[in-house]
Image (cartoon, rainbow, N blue to C red; front, side, top):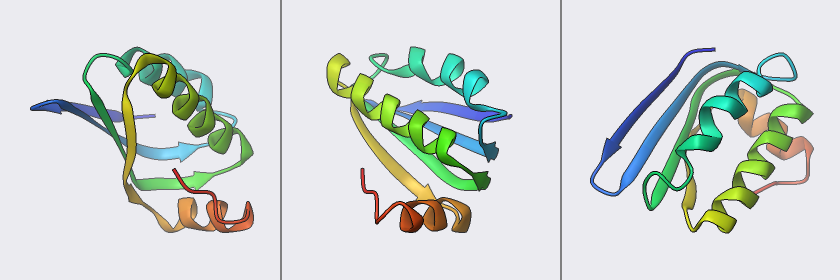
Length: 95
């Protein structure tokens, strides 16, 4: 699961390329949770996510909760069709 990470000014931009599924969330959580608090803002680019399931959605919820606890503003910078479909299936989830 390749991710890219770049900090510009006060925002860390993280791009996820590939699956956001039960098979990848543990690895992604280990890579993403330490990013919270490293900068005042964290922007997740999900435009290259090829597949997303309930576990991926749970990871986003955990990241959202932890970002609030650590004082990091979390935003989504892009959404692939797979991400949009998952959000729609879950009743229009928004971050």
